[in-house]
Length: 414
Image 1 (cartoon, rainbow, N blue to C red):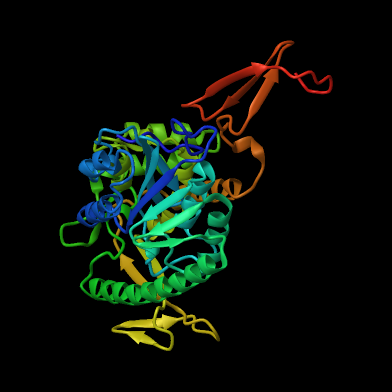
Image 2: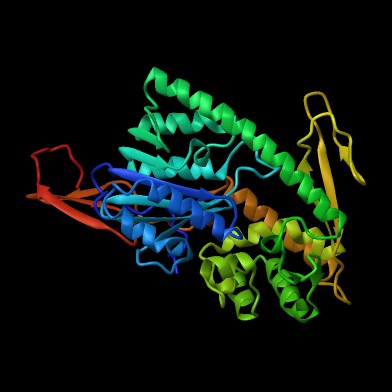
C-alpha cells in the first residue's frame, strides 16, 4: 500500500542535491478507469524506453498506483487529486488520476496544476515526458501558472514527439498553441460529460458516484443513494462528538473508526478494511463533512454544476438558474435520500457539529497557528560546532545528515 499522505514531497534517492534527470508523468481521469490508466502508462512509458529502467516500470503497469508494485511509492494528495511518486534508476515517475474535465472546474485553482507545480519545484527535472500536452494542461485558466513553474524548474518538455523549451520564444508560442487546443478539447469533453450526467439524473441515479457519499449512506446497485439504518448509532455518535468542543479531531475520527465508519475513498487509499481511524489528517476529514450537515438534518442534497452551454435555459426538466451578464448560470441537481426513523441526530446537535466543522475549515484556511499539526522539518537545517558544520535535509521519513569542515565565521549562529 502507498505511504500515507505526506506534508511535503519526499526527496527520493539521488535527488537531494541535484536535478532529477527525468520526470515521467502519466495521468488519467478516474479511479474507476483503471483500464484507461493502464493504457496511458503503457503509452507514456512505452514511448520512452530509452530512459534507464523504463522497461521495468512498463512491466509493472498500474501496480505502483495501486500500491502493489515492486517500487517504493510515495502517495501525494493535493486537494482531491491523488498521485503516487516513485523513483527507479534515477528517473522520477508521477502517476495521477485526477480530472480537469469536470463540469465544476474551479475558477481559482486546479488541484492537478498545483500538484505539478509542487513536483516541478521538488525535483527540478531536466526533462519531463508526457504522452501529449493535454496530460499536463486542460484549461487556459491555469496556463500561465504552470508555464511559470516550468520556466523556473524544468529544462525541456517532451510531449509525445514534440519538444518544448518553456524559456524560448518558439517554445512559449508552442505552449500557447497547445494550451488553446487542449482548452477547446476540454470544453467539448465537459459538454458531453454534462449531457451524460443529465441523462443519469433523469433516471434517478446519483451523478457523483460512490466516493461522494457521506457516512451513513451507501450507493445502491441501481445507482441511487440510500440510508443505512444499521449505521444510525455510529453516525449519531460521530455527530455528537463533533458537537463537543472538548474533543480533538483525532479523538473523534479514532472513535468513529472504532465504530466501523469508513468510505470508498478511505478504502481505496488505505485498504479495504480501513476506517476513519486510518486517516492521517483528522481535521481535514471533519472539515469535509460540513457539506453534509444539512443532509443529515433533512435527508436532501443539492449539487450545483456550472452550465456548460452558454445561452441554454433548460435541460430536460432542469432549469438553468443564476443567469447573469457574462455568467451562463448553473444547474441544480436535487436528491431526496431520506433519513432513518428517528433521524441521524437531534437538530441542535447537528447545528453544533456544523459550527465545529465550519470553524475547522476557517482555521485551515488561515487562522491562528495553535491548531496546526507540527510539520516535518523542511528545507535546510544547519548547526555547527568548533570544527564541523552539519546540514539536515529531507522529510521525517528520509532525513539526510551531511557534514563538512566548518568555515571560520564569528557571526554565524550555532
